[in-house]
Length: 415
Image 1: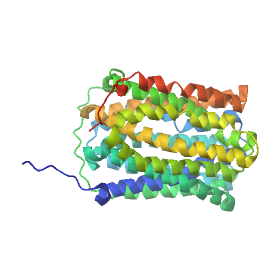
Image 2: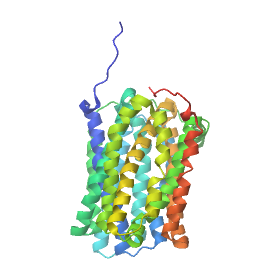
Image 3: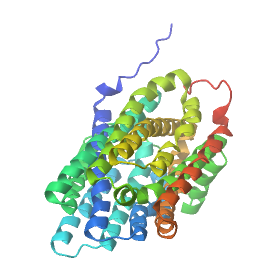
Image 4: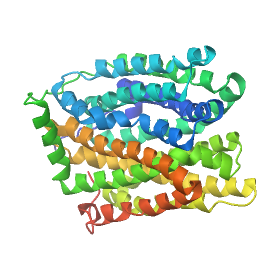
């Protein structure tokens, strides 16, 4: 009888723990900035809805500018880890400019937008490198579990980050709270640098940047499953970004929620994410990632509808939105984990960097355009009507998945 190879459990793998810890600390700092930056813009610098839309889009705009090229470069490189470390260091330096700019009276909304562009550019390169790098660290049979672990780290950050952000904003003001993100970027860089797993990626031979980019585009658009995943993600990102661009202003002005409760809603969503990360690997083993995706898209519009309907006393609005945030947290993490596992499974080895970059280009481009559209529509239509537009738009995610090969009857678990 041939012995079956059993990989070491992820929790016992040093390199995976380092990579997971790097994501955890970096995401915690990012969650602090996610609240502190818009609060700085809206309350201290008097940003308009249109400016808030530009600020929300700035982090994603680099995906449109260099996203495809980053994927082609990732496929050409033998080692990705040094580039990932450099990206985290540059992001830390950019974030660290905000407190001194505030002290000197130089901080403006355009300054915040410029910092967001730098951090977004680093995120583009980091993400392009991270996709093939994870293959070197995590065995193929453990990738769904590993992705769930990363989502757990993100969810933990959304639980603790907003509370930390709220406390820091109250005690040292929003611009100085952002400094925490600079520290966490540096911590992430040190943790990633400590990973020892050999990078065995075989570089793709250069055939010209645009020829390689076209291969990545064809790899997504010509593959029915990857095409459906990408179309679904573009839809949710576009309307989700429009929603998030206005969420802080809408919560503070229309719903009259205190800033602390706005942060608490994000924390509740993080709790839902933790539940989703814990449940998804088990459910995926039983039902398969395909079925998980088919059912999760049905609940994606819930948060949008709930926010648009919210009314009455503050406690009622908060409880309604908190319940929705909890469920949505579970659904989003389940969707994201299964999305990543299926994308890795379906991507040819030599095209992983470019396929990931192509999908990221489209998804993050949708985030950028959605944020801009949300800000402009907020100026023209008002805040609550835009939420209804977003809720209707997210319904379009359902046909993308339900009309794809992912919904094949009796599809077995993806193993």
